[in-house]
Image (cartoon, rainbow, N blue to C red; front, side):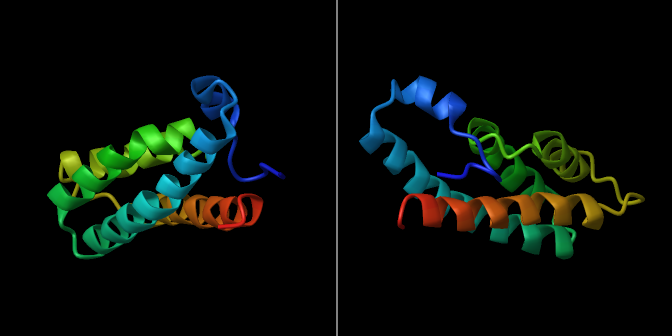
Length: 114
């Protein structure tokens, strides 16, 4: 396991090193975060602030748990939606978040043979 684009420290602690539980969380990450990231991307592109806020808010615990290192950027995206910051271009911040998710997804797939 490389754990270059994500960290399992918090998860190992939570799972008490139960490998099956850790694998279940990894699969959940792949399913839910993949779906939520797509919703987030589309919502931001369409300037659907509420949908963007909801998707970002929903993703926060998982992004934090897997230690992707982009929690603050995700919060920026969430707040952009929450406060309808029409004068702010969120695209760069969003791109960083989505790239981190993509890299973590690929690595998790490899590490867990999913």
